[in-house]
Length: 79
Image (cartoon, rainbow, N blue to C red; front, side):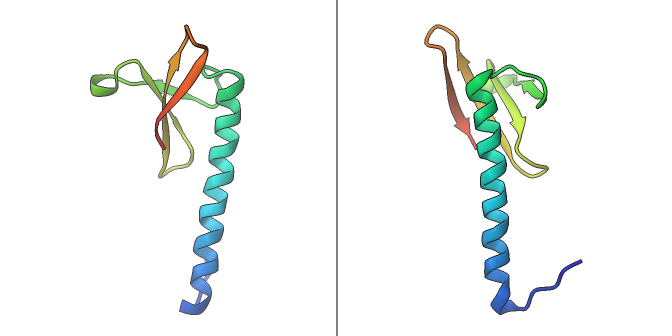
């Protein structure tokens, strides 16, 4: 485990945000090529978000998107 004093905690938080950014960029690149590719695993959603898909960025964060086949586009609903 790491311990960061208050003065050095801010750069660590920025680094975590940057890693999350890189993970989300990699997932967006995969969605650009083939939104229904497996892996990474995705789930078809039900309820209010019926017709949308969800894929994990990491344990805490998900990417929710909708595939519009006629327009050949992917609409990001939540990140």
